[in-house]
Image (tube, rainbow, N blue to C red; front, side, top):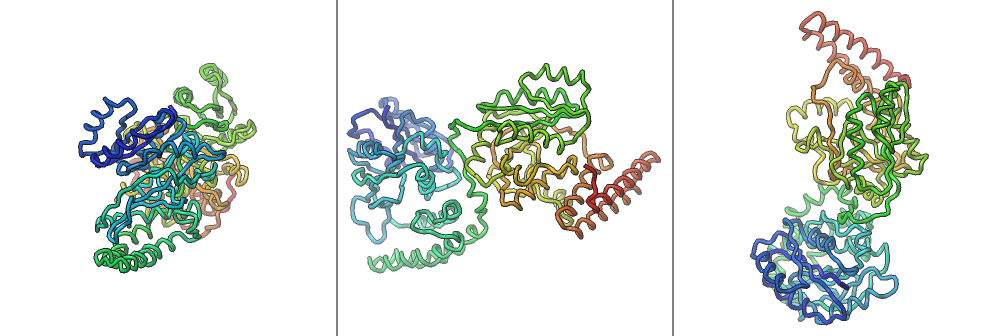
Length: 601
C-alpha cells in the first residue's frame, strides 16, 4: 500500500459519490486505499457506503458520532495503512493525476507534507464563495498529503477545533516545525463554488474564537503573514472592521447588492454572535496541545511515587493495577511510613520489582513524596507521577498520554488527569483554588447552594491554579527550580503551596481530561473535630501567612476559631463537649504556630 486517501463526510451523499468517482479513477503507479470517515451523517450515507465498499476493495468505510472534521480525519489517520496520507473533502473533484503529483512532491528531501492547488474551476461570481489556494501557504486539507509518521509525531489534528476552519493551519504549523511543506501546483483539486447565504455568514463568525488559538500558539492569526502579539484585539478588529469592509468593497465592484448588504450587516451580527464569545473565550486553556492519535513511542523513563501508610491491601491493588499500563519504562517507588518490619517484609514479597524507601516514623504526604521525588530524579526520571495508595488504575494508556501532554506543552510543570471517586460513575473534582478568607466563605456557601458549578473537572483541557494531589504528573526540571513540597504542611494544602510556587516561577498547571484511576476514598463523612479537620484549617492559615497575606491569615484563623467555639454549644453530651473543647484548644495552638510561621518540620 503506497497511499491512504482520507475523505471526511457529513450529510453530502450526492457530492461524496462524485468525489469518490474521481478519487478511485486516479492514475497512480502504485496501490492506494480510500477511507471515507463518516462524521455522523443522517442522509443515507451509511447505506450507500456499505453498498459501494462491498463492491470496491480499495474503499473502506469508517463511522463516528458527529464530532467535527478534525476528529473525522484523525479517525482515518489511525486506520490508514500506507506511509503517505492524502486528504480531500467530500465535495471536491480531484484531477486524474492528483495523487501521482502529490506522491512525487512529497518524495523531495526534507519534505514532511505537500499542499496542492485548489481552484473553483471557473471565475467566482460576486455572490459566490469557494476555498482557493493558487500560490501555496494556505494549507487547505481538501488538497494535502502528509507522511503518516510525521502526523503521529505531532499528534494529528486538534479535535477541539469544532468546524472546518483553521484546524488545517494548526496542523501545518506543527508539521512545519519538523520539516518542509512542499508546494505542488500540478496537484489540482476543483472545489465547486457555492452561493453566499446568511447561514454561511453566521457560520463564518463561529470561526473567530479558534483563530485566537493559532494566535496564542504561534504568534499569528491562521497564517504566518498575519503576525500579532495581541490576538484577541486583532481578531476583534478583523471581525468588526477590516474583513467586512473588504467584502463590502468587493461586492460593490462586482455590482452585487445582495453580497453588499450581507457584508454591511456582518459587523452588527458579529457584535451579537461572535464578540461575546471572543471576549470570554478561555484562550489559555485552548492553547494547550494534545496528542489525539495516541500512537507514538519513545517516551523518557517515568517514576511513580506512592506514599504508603498502613493500607497494605489498597497498596497491593494500586501497584498491581499499574502493571497493566503500557508505558515503556516505568519505575514504581513506594515510600513506606511506620510499618511493622514483618508487615513490610510481607508487602515486599507480594510486590516484586518495586523500589522501597522504608521509614520507621510517619513522614506524612509531604515528607514521603519528597523522598520519592528525590529517588526518582536521582535515577534519571524527568517525569514523576505522584499517586495515592488508595487508587486503582483503570486506563492503561493514561501515563503515556499525560507524559505526551507534558512533552507537547513545555511550560506545563504539573498535569493531572480525570479521576473517578469510588467508582466509574462519579468524577472527582480535582481542579481546586488557593485558599483565602473570602474564597473559603463563598465556597462554603456556594457548594451547598450550587454544587454543580463547583465541578470543574470536565471534558476540556483547563488551566488550573492547583490540582488535588491524588494523581498528578510533575516535570523534574520544575521541581529542581522551585523545590519539592514544604514538609511543614505534613498533609493537606501542600498542593496549593506547590501550585502557587510553580505559577509564580512562570510554569503552568493543567487539568487533562483523560481517564486514569478510581480513588477509593473512604466514604464515612467528614469529622469536624478530627486530625484532618485540624490540619486543613491550620494549613490554610499557614499558606496565607507564608505567602504574605497576613491580614487574610489572621481573619481566617479568627473565623475558624470562632466557628469551633460556637459549635461547642451544640454538644449533646459531656463526652462530646470535652471532645469539641479539646479540638478548640488544639486548633488555637496550631493556628498560633501557623500565624508565626513556626510550624515544626
